[in-house]
Image 1 (spheres, rainbow, N blue to C red):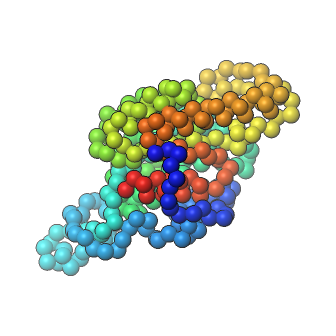
Image 2: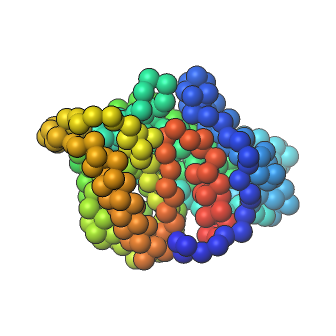
Image 3: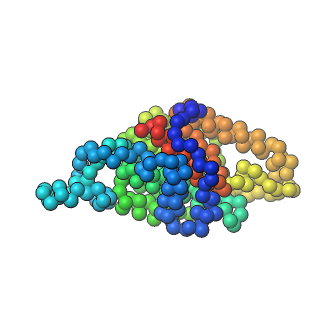
Length: 307
């Protein structure tokens, strides 16, 4: 539950900066680089939670990794079987990614937008799941559900998901209630739901929406993602700010940004954390100008507690 001390890998001293990931460009390579960097720095095994001790066979499904096909069994039976190993969790991971207009915010031309950073995080989480032979899926939404790819295993699924992540753009508002209700109806088998958003919403409404999934037994992890400038505004004079989702313009006093805004943001984050904790969800606060390490290590610790 949120707030508990978790055992798991320690955080590396350094991480891969977002500016470097941005230069890499290719989403699959970004995911692999981020995950391998975290696993190497944390001194974990190549497949966290995965043992090489053989357990049993299962039928081959199109998209499965051919490296695990038992070709000797195929020669004897003319059927394709995959070797399964002790430690395979067969967990279903669904990543929920907010693609509303506010996710397009960034600090400057060097840092990634929240949406770009969110796609990196989503891809890395999927990469971790799929390399453990778990199933991974994706739901994107703004004021309505945009895409829903049910969790599946295999390299073919990764190609489909990464292709869609590469093509995402930010627009519209955000409706967590509709998105969570959709998942609650469709995700009938127990799994892991990872939600990535800036959570510009009423915390109470978010809590009610989250409860729908928690009540169905899903393990929930919430990544609260903001741009660096949203956590620490650097304006030196009064400014006019336009809401990316509604288009409304508000006049902001620089003194309020320095003193009132940090307090309101802290209260907002505290409320989100409280609602997440009330349903047993894990809350991770993060900024789009920091390495992915903390988010990925938070997820690995979370998975260690929810096998």
